[in-house]
Image (cartoon, rainbow, N blue to C red; front, side):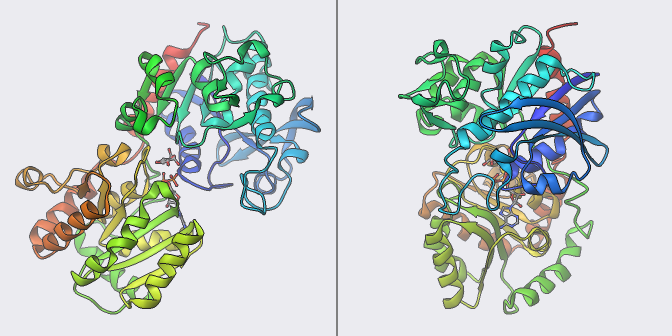
Length: 470
Ligand code: ADP
Ligand code: GLC
């Protein structure tokens, strides 16, 4: 058994803003089959506290960045969850990352430094007689843990893996917060945690963790380029030997199609059109389930929507985020009967969209892994995706070769421009006219492995290499 503490700022089913929550929620179960005893540490936001009523205090951390903090042990199914209970940092309504003004909470550096500190403390001191051999740290919110571990004198005993889910978020704080964040000034230099005159929690993790991973092999290579590295490509090139890309999986029990062959989809599509008020139609029903941000490239889709509609397709979108994109899609739905838009977050509708849709669109400018194209594969909802990151690694395009070999599972386009997206939509609509080819692609997609098996084994092997005391 390898003992691993996974440290994340969100985790299903308690709190989710994106795919990180799904991954953090799935890893312990997936790894249990690989001889890994993984427990999870999560901040005690109201939703997490409510979901762990009666949880016992198992560690007292004293004053932690301005108020008392304890660690409580809660259960999540048969998994062990440690909750960092620090009301001054987490007991507040609204988004877990953003204040009512839509900007980061001003004390985010302290809020997630506290999470990292608690992780390092558990690793250094043990908890309830259990000591992790490896800390698996997710994103900048856990990035300071390896630095604290050094300060606690435990870096020689506990291995650390930092997983980058999205390098666009780096956890910056002004230099004058160094002491308040309990960070040694000796680390504050360009080879350390300094990033252009600020403290970077992500860079701290990239410098100080024993190994680094990201969520797809292609994103691992992209991260080392100026185009995708967002200022940290040089740091990642320096650490190339310790960097790997391990694809995300999806929870096959949560994402199970209510049919087991392509023929079962038609009733779902009919029901979905009826639910959304979309007219009967012979063309493909395209769906999108996404945060509406620059990353996701949905402004390009707005641009080329008339082409999709003219070719007989329809669009059903579920998402929220950027006000301009929300307004743009709302407006498109008002103007076109073939467009349905739901602004908001709705897990059940997301399932119905994947089940009833013919195509799932993911035109991202960058995509570390992406989960919705994986749901699409499993449900025979063919992914039409940008050729980047995990999208490149999971979809086999309907290129002439892919079609001739009868292995294609979806559509890809590059570079990520409106014109190329338009071309891919045209290709998709043309292929829709060949039901036999389409059905073969659905079969291929539904047979494509999208579970955690292989990646869980890869993580387990990586943890083995990180164990320091045998
Ligand atoms: P990211 O983490 O960058 O947002 P992913 O594709 O990895 O992208 O994960 C997004 C997750 O969030 C998926 O599980 C997707 O179904 C879900 N999701 C995104 N937006 C919504 C929404 N509006 N309603 C329901 N689920 C959503
Ligand atoms: C990030 C990425 C997404 C990835 C998810 C889980 O939010 O944007 O591509 O699937 O993390 O790793």
